[in-house]
Image (spheres, rainbow, N blue to C red):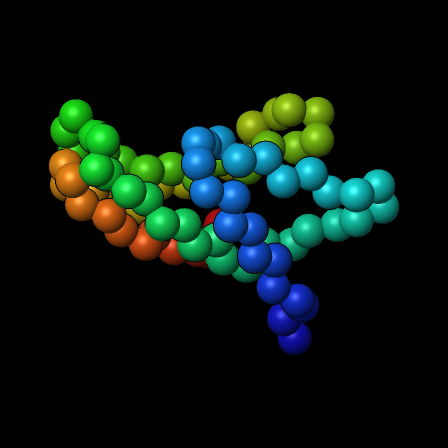
Length: 80
């Protein structure tokens, strides 16, 4: 059974950190993000980085293809 959804819509610059409260746990099933390539100088490959509270990189995930200059795309990262 899936738990509650966490929706974060920060807008603006990335990366956008989301800090867990003490004693809170997070089990990811999917992550979806919208990438805007309007300011890109060339095709680009978005990525999702997941970090431990210590700052250690746990995972860096990429989609199967690039996004064209000027294009926007919603990318879903799953499974991990």
